[in-house]
Image (cartoon, rainbow, N blue to C red; front, side, top):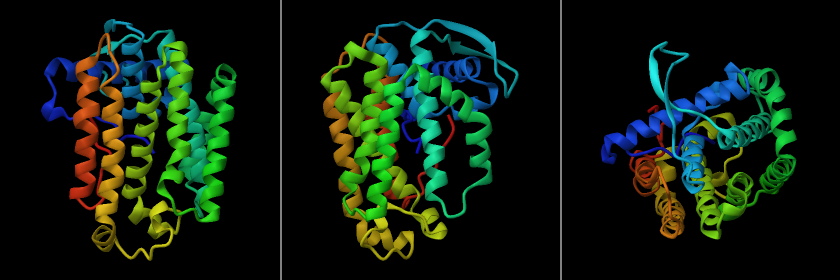
Length: 291
């Protein structure tokens, strides 16, 4: 359920693009330092946005350094991690752990790779993150249990099904920002979480159908293929995605940032709209592209 909150590069100033890339590489480096090198594969666009946003709210200006990349071995500009980044790494670890656990419980044919990743890579780091954020861990567990219960019951409301993940993002940002977290920030992350859940469900329709797994859009609907799905549900899907997108924008209008404003505005105003139009225009083939 990660990898959708990205910038729109074509409408981004170069300075903001390179700042974004530096945050991406910096978060990857910090995950390797705080956790283990294999955990660096959990670096994702959604958490890079989370990192940039939280640093902007706390008015913590980025400090840059040139370090070698584990993949290319070339030196790249990175934003140096700090105590706030460490908190974000913990939230990322908790989200990753419960995502992998949920995939295992939902799937009729659990992925061997995901099972090994959860057991060998994430579980040890999860214990440390749980120790640092015990209440957040408890809430994440409760929200995933609530989601599974609704799936078993066959809940047809997309709003209700999206609520657990939306609430997890809202509580995650509250845990990181503490007293700096305003109602508008809570609303932004709540509706961003709803948007992520919905677009991920749309993106996975064909895969879930083939694997006979739960998808919120299958409840009360005889799914056959994506073409027919978009013919029948296209307007409903557009309404759901754009309603969440507009709610994110409305909340963001009331938030003042001290730094990283260019990249963050690009992501929230253009990036997620681009993703929305992408999935609507290409009938669900919303690929998780790399920057």
